[in-house]
Image (cartoon, one colour):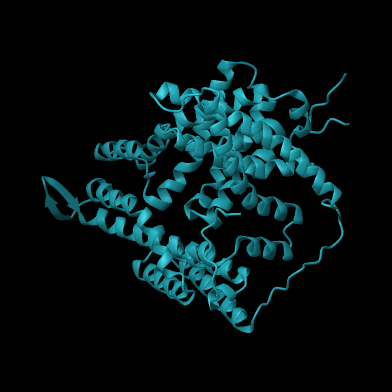
Length: 255
Length: 199
């Protein structure tokens, strides 16, 4: 069943790293540019993250992710360059519009932070299997009931997308118009969504019965089918991540 | 069956099974809106429906998990807005219990309240991450205009977000309300943890 995730299934040092280490990396190195708002620090974080993505052989998959947001970043430069509240020094002028230095610098800082954010989260999105991530959290104390809830989302969405085509065809064959002016199209919305909601609520009931039959609410400690290998390198890596995090906090507190 | 409080944290299995279903409904709602080329996102119908059926906590968790799962599989930016979805879930769950779904006018009122809550929670996030913009053409155009007139950053960003959220959230609440009304009682009572059916 096709999944909704952008996960790229390869075997690389990054993929083999356990999910908790990757999640700690992502959270910490996403946070550091906010704690230390210097462009140099953001660039270091970005460089580090990009090298990890290169190590994971997923770096080319980041291009569509970033280019998706390029237009937004362009508008940020435009709007901040023209209208940022602290604008004073003129940078340049074209077509009668004056762009100021403060606004452009602010936009640059913002954009670098955002691209860093996209790259850090791509370590999770591109190189971590969602089910592994959820299992890792359950191993460490997340209630297995919530682990189920998160895992089943990943399975339910492709299932429901398939049903949408069936419902679309069924309603069209009963004379529902899906093309035309806005009013015609809007009228089609509820006849499409309502059958889907009904059938999925009934399936929720079926699911819950199936779960209860399989000891979903059992209070006993659960065992896992697969093992999670945490290598020594991973532990060193985690220590370095923790160290960077503490240093950033200390730096911030000294400001 | 005893009456439980709407704020109880004791979730029944079926309420938990509702959560992925509501994320699915969010996803499909967005898909249908895109297929029909409607000018609204309509991507929170599932969250609001879950809140109407199973109360504020399930609504909030549905919203949060919706954004978190999108965040770890597709679009990292969504994860941050999980707080907004959770806030919408709590608002609808609480006000639905308080009787805000009695008639059409109150439902529209609920839509407006949800839009305000969503905007108030999203605006600080918008300001911190992208200087106040939202990525929506019309909203950002309004933002630019207000910033050119030296309006306060918070106000400009607030109105940017509200311009997009108000029609969307009112529509979403109305659609969820209509669908909720068409659901048979034997189905809705399964999820509710404070209503009992009597013969």
